[in-house]
Image 1 (cartoon, rainbow, N blue to C red):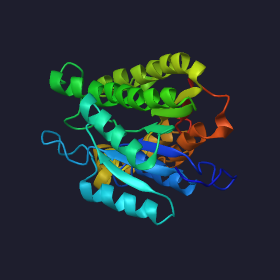
Image 2 (image 1 turned 90 degrees about the vertical axis):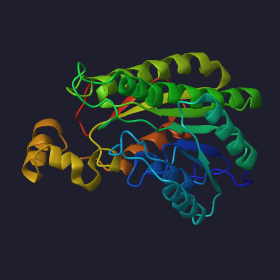
Image 3 (image 1 turned 60 degrees about the horizontal axis):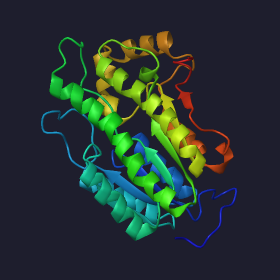
Image 4 (image 1 turned 90 degrees about the horizontal axis):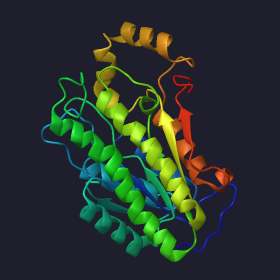
Length: 285
């Protein structure tokens, strides 16, 4: 554990954080890990670090991406470790959290970012989505969030020092979108999971919240301008933004990371059980 103390410039000094889905370039997880590190936290960077063979267009990070993130964090003067796991596999999650705890100390800040949807990953009309894809969307988004929270919070409870967890839901967890039925179901479940964990863990001094991003310009949805292409090119994208997003732009990953880090900070000490819209106005419920 670091011997430094929190300051206004380094609010996470002396804390150990774990971020899932951390490796993907231009991803929310990577942006969150870097923001926590800039705030002084030591960071365990967890990622599956491999592509899905049957969903090659689903944007994932690689082992090289994970290694480069760790190097970038270490250059900020804090510690970082890479850990690999499929978040839907309890044994892999437990091993990854144990490794992170052994190398950095007890994790007291958790950002559950791993998840998503896309081609081969539950995207499409519900009547056409294969069962294996629907289950995988639930496994990664919901089961993964639960398993990582369970492994980390169990250690927080044992240590008795409390902690904070932030889960990534989505605007699709609050309003339905065509072709995203599996994802909407999963992200709605993340919100209720967040609230249940907040109720159960509050007495142990552990706050649990969620963020609900809108349309974020990451490699998950817009690698090589895939999202723009699906909308018919620049004109289609411009029409979508004008119609759907009050602030008139796609969101950068860092915007979501900033909200996650606020919910993980002591500035949000009175906040738990919330599902915060960070959607550039796209969702207002």
